[in-house]
Amino acid sequence: MGAGAEALADAVAGAATEGAVGAGSSSSSGSTEADAAADADTEAETDTDADTEAVGATELEAGALGAASPVAAGVRPQAPRTTARRRRRIGRTLVCRRLARWSFALALLALGCTGPRANKPPSLTRVELEAGPRLSAAELRARARPPTTDVRQTLKISLLEGVSGRGFEGRGALVVRPGQALRMILLGPGGTTAMDVWISGDRFRAAIPALDRVVRGDASTPRSTLRGLPIDLLRRWLVAPFGGTLVHAREAVVDAAGHVGPGPGLLAFALFGRDFVIRARVGDVERGWFFSQGALHGRVEGRVTTLADGARFPSEVVFEGDDPPLRVVVVGETTELAKELPAATFADPDAS
Image (tube, rainbow, N blue to C red; front, side):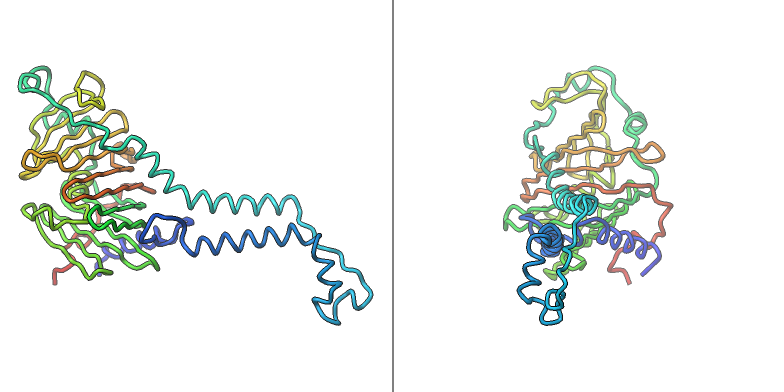
């Protein structure tokens, strides 16, 4: 394992151990068993402290501690008291655990409150495309400010595959070399690798060890083979923000009905091989639409964050795909510029 791969592994390990949610789960129905046990222990501690004055003396008098008890020796014990400070500390612990447990669910609710499907893609006639000021590729990049150096992000992710109904919720980390490559590792129960994704140019590799499944391909790979894999989203939204071969760009805003009007936003139409992508941004909010052979097959809604050098990078993403059916929600926990990572970080995992 090269130095770059080790750095990514360290980031993944950090994501797994940081916070209240550890390794993830195979469904989104509730907390992990470990969380439940932790809550039960804390609640038991709270109940014990609060009830000691009521039941402590009675249990001692009943001989619960045997002949050696203070009662047997003629000494009535003083029941321990729970101080207000201790009660507040225990209360804060319970609140923090519950907030940690539900923070991701609340984030998903906040991101998906309208949902990408509520937004229609922008529609411009040929006359409208040719009218008004247009942005060159250089002008678009200057306004969009995509990263120019490597980016590292720890994240929480939820995937729901529409055909089988199977889902996954967990944590992990990714590194991106803008416009070129990505490596992402997600963790499952017990801290094991649940998904390992590598993208370099048009090529990709996705491995799901639990299913003994490895999918390799490129831009020509049929989309039907990508079931449950967010390759399109990662390549077009994270690796190359406002990338591809630019067809048209302008300063504009797009409403939920798809109407395009003047305003302080960005709107770009671009080709990614045989596919077509529309991306719109107003402030920190982004929306996108993915087309293949003239048919809309994916919608995106999310937000961007500003990095230390002023670059903008996606921090929250909701993706809904139709072909194949897939819903992905990504919530970035930490996003930062990375010193130029070794080439081994983005090397083909199967290369000898």
